[in-house]
Image (cartoon, rainbow, N blue to C red; front, side, top):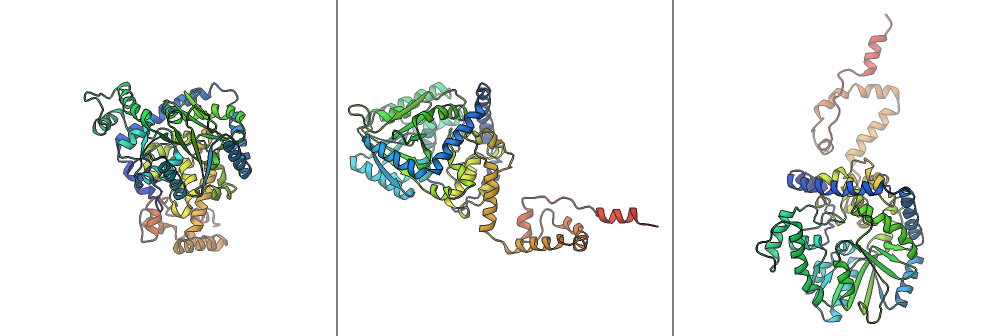
Length: 469
């Protein structure tokens, strides 16, 4: 599967994927090393910020204001962007967005484009959609390029190739890059230099580029891309045509609001005080940068998320992946186990809401509910609360008559003291089905160990020990 292919399937089998991932010791070592490094850097920088909690609260408040008034901010953004020469397009779903982007590229006569790392384009499967229309899109982010050359899938929101070590990356370069030095080693500087030389020709030859955006500013109609390598800036400034696919939740009201988010994002995402490159552009500037700018505003299920008063807070997400780096489940299974574009805790709450819980019913259960994800989230998304709510939605959406009957019987027994006392006398029978039993009970005990029942209940002991002579 190539980088960019949409990987939302009908109910991704997380339990099976996780079980396979747990047998891959190299994957676990790669994940542990990378997430620990990022987490420690982040913790050190957060410790410098006396007002970190106030910044988190401000970020959450700004995003909530946007979500409450999204229609107004979208119209304001469109008017401002159009006034500065950009062309704004609206896409209800992935098919509409992909078709719009492909048509815009075909209108230029080009068949090759360069691309900035973008979760929105991953979400809609833009790269394979373009390939089906004869357009080749080249990822220019180093990690995304590694994933694309390796015919692999991203496994992390910020570090897509986190599951690969440098020896594996060297093998990919030697196998897939025709201009890779034959004596290439796995030294990080050598690998980066090989990638830089490989991409340089693409930057200077390509006439069309595709990007996403970290933030869209309603006040000015501007877009911002934050990155660490400079490849994004090359894509955003050199080509004649720039097409940006932006989720409608990426809006912030004013330019001044960047003061908050440009402190929250880099510390949470990569453990840096600021991103090395923050590129902001507003429409078209004659003689400077792209002379044809298109912005595709993407819904793709986001308005459905807005309807849920508890779940809508997931749309605050600024894609920092801090929750992935602390999640005990993600650290042991990696991103591929989730079977969806967004892995980790944020993926477990965002994906089911975007596609419907019936199509991602396993993901809300891919969590220990330890709460660490909420503690590190820079915009205070209460992921554990949303997960519990989604688990409730899954149960309501998928009723199991046998399970319903068991719980109804248990509820009936608990309503009366005598009935409950009689039911407890059946408890020793549980030892025969603790780790198995006939279907459908075996489906429940396959992933749970029932407690060893006592041979005598507390009630029976009390009666015997305290009965009057």
